[in-house]
Amino acid sequence: MSAPLDLQQALSELLGDAQLVTCDLPDTDLKLWLIDGDKMDRAFSPEETRRILHEPPYWSFCWASGLAMARYLAEYPEWVKGKRVLDFGAGSGVAGIAAVKAGALEVVACDLDPLAIAACRANAELNDVQLNYSTDFFAEADRFDLILVADVLYDRANLPLLDEFLSRGQEALVADSRVRDFRHPLYRRIEMLEAMTLPDLCEPEEFRHVSLYHARRS
Image (spheres, one colour):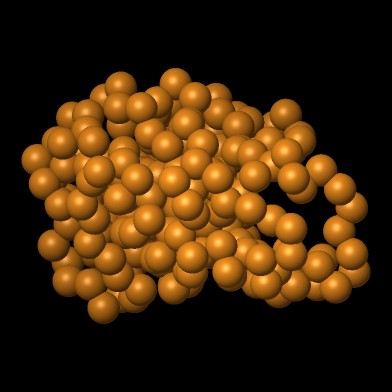
């Protein structure tokens, strides 16, 4: 199967020799279009580094928290079964796709990046599931049962979003490996999960420990 042309072209503009390949996610029945890590085992030029930092292709990786969330929903489908779900900062769409597989009534993949939305579409097709799409969380109505959030808090400037998730959903599940304990009165840590980013970025061991937090609208 050939990689989606729009995604491959975008990736090639960042890194000329980068290739998208289909990858089976370990301990799941999911697969995603991801950057081929075997071809990226080299030093980046200064210009490549500049481009990556300016416009990082988050959608071409399956980050540890997204993988952990997907596994968790497969094990505990009652979180999403029969519910309306929004996957915030969807990236590759892994959490949203897992929610559909676990029986969600509707899943909206929401991301500001048009390329992430394109990746979600390609990955939904790859997994034979149906997603809906949004590029503006705040344009969505307050109609969701659950907001899924994975790997969004890497930038501490995003922490105020914790107050916003419950403006559109009755509950929120937040998976994150970057912020050890974001003390917030509405959120409590309910699980510690283990996962890794794919392809392997040789991240520090601490980033393989994923905290799962839950909040419910009062």
